[in-house]
Image (cartoon, rainbow, N blue to C red; front, side):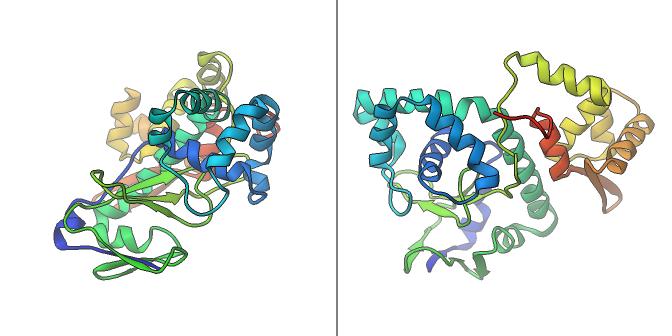
Length: 285
């Protein structure tokens, strides 16, 4: 078990990333490529990558990223060797870039939920609900599936990084000179990794045609969580119109609405996230 020790200053310097980290997704996706877990989530993606990445480049990267355990810092590898750098860029263009919108949508939704827990209940609630294999025993964060050791933040704080390719259990990086990072898996769902349409406007036009442009904008706004007034401002409609749009989306199971003090808060559901990812349920890579 890894035990991460917090001071009061560390608690105030704990942050949650709102966006996916490209190099982390590269590293963790290379590990997932060598495993068989999560076939409903990663099966189509694995077939796509294996069919399109040159075998010699893929072999080079896989030799440096074992499916489990320690892997070198991808940034360090890319900077130290031109060949590795080219292989990483080529791999990213094939394995990560086409799925980036889908990955970003899911990570943004996770950030919104974590941010709500932080805003309503404080950082200790955030840490205690981060993951089933992570426990908060004030002032220590226990990560159950890591090597047995103690790690002291000593006032540096920690960055919590949600990841699409992190699977089952969080992982940690403590690189001298950098803020410690705990990478944790978002909630995975079958079909969540979808390639973006070939034309950038195809998805927006299709979603707008399906839901209506205002309702599509409302669904996009709910990814980060918002009140009815915020929804009205983002969609450039009246508060009454925003409330009606939220009602329709809620009835369709695309968002949830709950009361927070004197206001209500709208948040996207997993079904809404899949719709925003830009593909019909029967789409095949």
